[in-house]
Amino acid sequence: MKIFKKSILIFTFLFLILSFLFSFSFAEASNYPLTIIDDTGSAITIPEEPQRIISTAPSNTEILFALGLKDKIVGITNYCNFPEETKNIEKIGEISPLNLEKIVSLKPDFILAYAGFQLKEIPRLRELGLKAIIIEPLTLKETLKSIKMVATVCGIPEKGNALMEDLLQRINKIKTKVSNIAITERPNIFIGGIYEAIWT
Image (tube, rainbow, N blue to C red; front, side, top):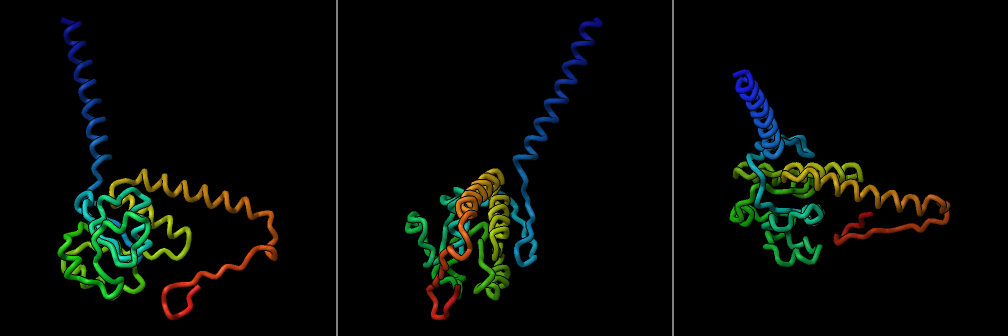
C-alpha cells in the first residue's frame, strides 16, 4: 500500500511538472494578441500571426525579404524592385499617394508603411480598419530597432536577432578594415536619388 501511495504521489508530481512545462511552452509559442508601439508613437494590436503583409516602401520590402517573409508579402509599390523576386509580387502603385482601393482589396493583416510621404495618409488607412505600422529609421541603430519590431510582429523574433547580429558583424568588419586609414585618405561619397531635388 505504501508503495502504491508513493507511486501515486510521484505520478501526480510528474503530471504537474509536465503540465507546467507544456503551458509555458505554449505561452512562449503564442504571443498574440500583440501590441507594439510604432515610430510615430501609435499603439497597434495584432490579433494573430500575420499571413498577409503589404509594404509601401522599398526599404520596408527589403527588411521583409531579409527576414525570410517573402511568401507573406501580398503587395508592394512600383518602386520595390529589389531583390529580384519582387517582380512576382502584386503592385499597389505609387509610394504616394497610396492606392487605398487596391490596398483594401488585398486584405492585408498589416501594412508596413513609411512615415515620410505617407504620414498624412495613414489615418485614412486606419479609418478603413487596416493595421498600419509605421517605421522611419534614420540611423543604423533605428534600422536595427525596426528590424526587431517587424520580426516581433511577425512572430519570428529569433530571426530578427540573427539578422541584427549578422549586420553588426559585417559593420564591425568594415570598421576594422578602415580604422587604419587616415580620414584625409578616405574617399568622399555622394549618394544621389531619383527625385529632382538633390538629396545626400
